[in-house]
Image 1 (spheres, rainbow, N blue to C red):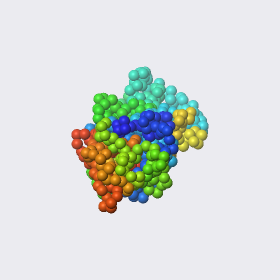
Image 2: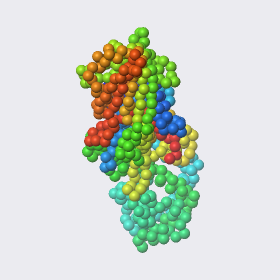
Image 3: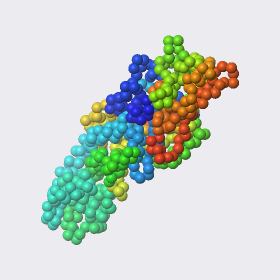
Image 4: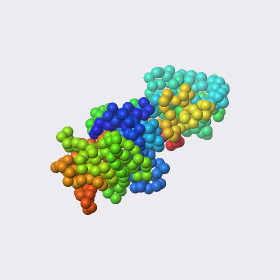
Length: 528
């Protein structure tokens, strides 16, 4: 199976909404224990080899990644777009593997933004009982002053229309009533001269200023009676002015987060390339590592990870396989499949003359750690951009776990079914550790060189599948070159399969490379 056929799948079935069901050719069939153990041993060995290159300090943060196809390293053309094949990988929600302890599985394309969207829709902002009581008391006390503001303003400037409210809501989604329009939009935004895409002046700022007229310096002379009424109102609110500010901020932020779930050109959405997505925008992901730097890393042969294992033919058929430091596992499939189109294919260890014991060394050059991150929600001069707000999730989760007793964000009706937050819940790949394709050396300790070579014949360029189901390279990587050499002793020989180098070319957007390990950030586990 080629990498393009396995993209956005995992090797084994995991949680329905976090990880897509694997195609039939990858599902564990007749002997699930053998395949599960084999895959676990392989990806754990990949992670161990990565630690050997990146250093022991990384060991605590690196996790094995269930086989999910190859990773397309040429992730952007630099024109505010992302390679669709890369996006398919990194936009998958990460969850703990249900089959391999300590490993993580990557879900289907776009599953992370989809699950995050469910979480945002379940968010609420609330006061705790004490703050709610204090605010209601303050609103009752200041009701006369509130009515005075509205009456004075409308007496001078006329009734506030629905269209005006809609315009003001572009500044702050918390503006719902005439009093909100006057305080937040007219006074706090227009009369205060606040720059575009900047939060309006808060009520507490109006309350604390010694001269409200100076703070609202762009108000016309006709606004003097309104400003006087506002001053009386914010003073009547007392300490509850800060509560109203908090409520305004929370409701506005929540509305903006929901709005930005639909990506666009104006809120930081990103286009896809390879193939291009025309004008359809997607939730943005990015990296501070450019494709040229990634290519340089992949071509660095001094950064090489090694995976070694041994195999022997089993009496009942198949093989007994053992990775370094692990026990023996039985495996009924291929050991190493090679093919040339549909005309030549087979298991290198199952041919006449191969013998019964095999040592396999896989060397993965160019180990490179590529950081990725979803676009964080932020307010800047370009407006409200990005979509992921970890601070809100963190606060809401802690409040929910505390019985929703605090003022602020929470999941008042509970988390959406099936979604877990915090460590070991739902996360995303914050780093993908990749390498160039491995050089594979198979030593046939008891093999008959001349007999075995009759099978390989003239096929010097082949495609390679490890264990018959993990494609190494696929069509986009090009063929491995096969070289056979007889051992210096009278028995045995070795086969070396060398992949083509990773190069930058017109086909670079399609070039995948193997994933050795990853780092995961768990939603709701950090304040930042």
